[in-house]
Image (cartoon, rainbow, N blue to C red):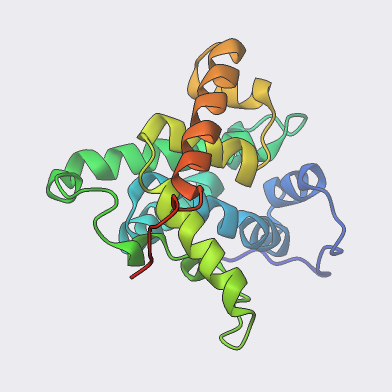
Length: 201
């Protein structure tokens, strides 16, 4: 038997309130939770996997585990770090099983890193220059070391705090800060304008 709520949770319902409702069998609250966080979960999976199909598989599996084990979550804590730890673990499991994909250079295919993959509101008639910049950024991300790319995405794209990243990755906050500094420096170098005399093809 499927439990259903008599009223959809308000749009402004907090994660904590939705978690408590979902634990009581409110399927609408559970659906709202997964809908709210699935895009950012997919973005993290894509950053870790480098392949949209694998990232989608990892995200779907992670969200299923998220729903099944929601009763284990401490509702007084932020939800994202806990969800991201599930996504991260699932990505690692899939990568271990798909070592063939890992032999391919992470930056061998720009299509892997197209931002449109994770942008549900992408407008094909939008600003071309902005689209080009976003593509350059994502291509540059693909060339970073995996641990640097992970730190950069968690902080600058997912907006996790230093302490949350420290807990999630199991490393000291000082390491988070130094690794993030190096990642930003490397990304800036990748995005720097070409030297004089260079031309685009």
